[in-house]
Length: 308
Image 1 (spheres, rainbow, N blue to C red):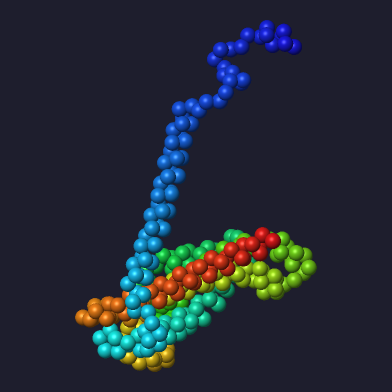
Image 2: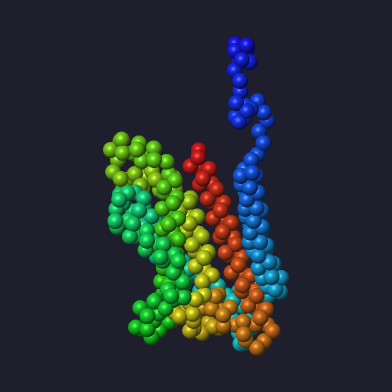
């Protein structure tokens, strides 16, 4: 066998299989491009983190001076005096009512798209397109639309109109996140329920939702956190109210809220007003950051549960 191999002359144009591998010119270029893209991604990620750190640092540095129990539990007084108690309560009520509207509709929409609509359903494709368009719609347009539908017809700005606007902002986020979470639920659970002859609606309520509830709650929390900081819609539908009174009636008049408090107070001609604006911004930023952290923790637990 050895003699036969030695007798066969090797073509010098063919590579020697025993020779060590060396990168060709094309492979070296691809390696350079890969390294450049990787470095660029790291730089972009560091820039995004640095930008967030800068924003948080600036708000904390300027807002800590305003934080106190008096600031949190008293109403505004005069030109930028007092605190943000009524605006804090008003924002909580507006956002809670908006979530009460958007969460059930969004979750049911996600369930329909995942569990009941067929893969070739034209209605499902149209609904997904509508949700994507709503998600990319500028919130100021939402404010204009709600103003035309509710405020212009009644000639009264109300907290209810603000809740409707924020619910429209929340809805596509909740629906899409619910859909994605439900798609991750193992198909074997559906197959087992079908094999036992369980109705689809009972499978959804008793099997699918208990597994996906953590991820659905994560999407709801993230959408609420985003809506809580929206200012543009509220400028059209809930910017006229008595800033020194606590008004929680959503249907009779405007309701004080943190975004409009910041908008109307930042240019008042007093130093105390600017300090209070930074304090209100810090309170709002703290809520949003805590909500996002809670959502991430809940999502991690949900993923671990699904893997188990």
